[in-house]
Length: 216
Length: 155
Image 1 (cartoon, rainbow over the protein chains, first blue to last red):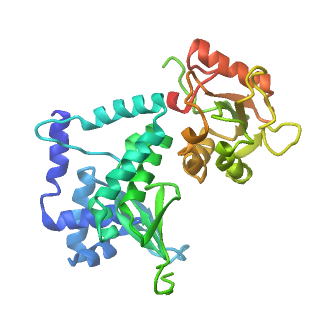
Image 2: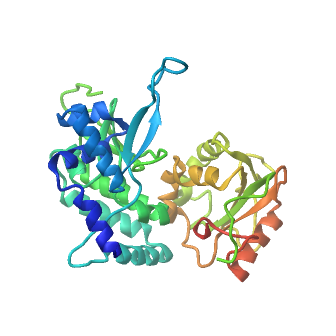
């Protein structure tokens, strides 16, 4: 089986709409997800959710861990719950084959060596501003950032440039911040806010300028 | 790579790192004000980061801006510090507010024309001197990455 065969096989596991909904729920969740929560989110029974979640694990799209619910332990605490999270493996299939990732890596290498950070950031800011959406969270979801609310902060569960950002962090994270600055309108202010994983940018709400009402 | 296990130090060792950068203007110029204004904050962040051990300072004691790694080049700045592990250093450099400063590096520093950073293992408690740090950088420039001098990209 070729690498392309394996990728297509893994993606084939997502053909079922219920399974796809479960995958999306787990992949976008800020934390590991249990069977009950996933079942409730998708609107299916716990046993059906469990069946599909385990199929996604078999396909290599999700991984599992076992943990007791917080605050419970010792004898009588029951069995630890099976928790699911998105696997780290990246699966990409392009038909016909395309190698934009490789092109991106080579371009990044050259831009890094040439020290063109500021030129890249200016281009990214312009590209973002040209496509500025009316609904930023929806646009971020569509671009694969998997946004979620954390109190008043909008955080991004996924970095769409992950492998490149890992290899050229200063260059690519700077580019990403500039892109998001361009996309964000008056309502949201992007800031560099790197955590242990996910995207290094988060958004805080800006105070509206006219009516004097504080949003936060 | 002929040098496996760069990431795993012998027991009782810490990771030393040095990097140099040539500023686009003098430190007291308006061009560098944005950088100089964040220096104290970013050094304080390093000191309270998990796995931080030590950083090199000049005689004034606040930062390393008074050190001259090249006597003939007043614009060449040096940074040298010791960490408990590669992961501790990586988390500070790339997954903390330091990244905010790093993303603006080309506003303040010329692009490097040769290797500008090096890492190596030191016995815990050892404090590298400026000469030692610069000689590790020279090793990397002359011989390429190896156990005596390597970078994040060699791991």
